[in-house]
Each structure stands twice: as structure tokens, then as C-alpha cells.
Image 1: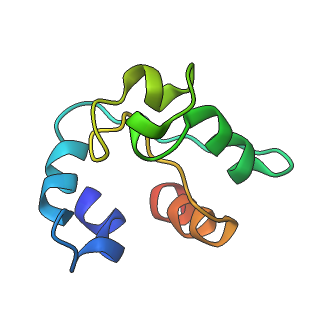
Image 2: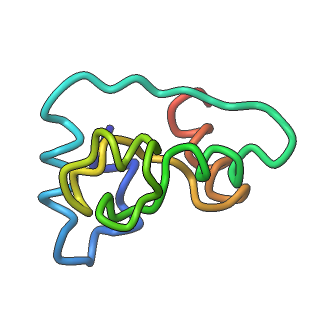
Image 3: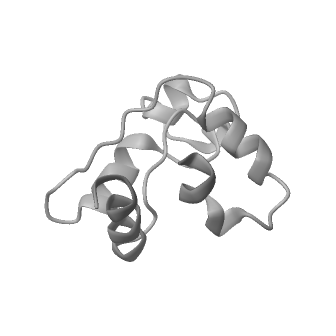
Length: 89
């Protein structure tokens, strides 16, 4: 499932490491429904790179590096729809 979920990155050099990390432990897929859900969630989780994430965000608190950053979140409503369909479709 992780390989298919992240196949948009298949040609990128970090793809195999990303899939390995995302399958290294439990994963809990969730859907946030609210106005501006993508933007609001991304505020809570912080920047992709934990070193650049605002203090107190999920990635600041729990991320260890840009790849192992604790949480995935869609980057756009279009990608959210695709990702939701992948898990819950």
C-alpha cells in the first residue's frame, strides 16, 4: 500500500527509503473534514523539514529529519481527494 500511495515519487531518489520508513511501524490513516482542512492541518503539523517547523508543531516535536518527519499530510485538496480514495475508496 505504501509503495502505491507514494508512487508519485517513484522516480525520486528518496522513494525506496520513504516506503521503507512508512512501513516500519503502525500507520493510522485519518481524514480531517473542515473548511480549509489542508491548510489548517499543515499549520498544525509544521514544515516538511522538522528543522524548519514552528515550535510546538507535530513535526517540530516528533520529526527527526526531512524524511522521518512523523506525519504525512496532503499538500492540496486535489491530492487529498486522491489519497483519501486510496485508503478509503
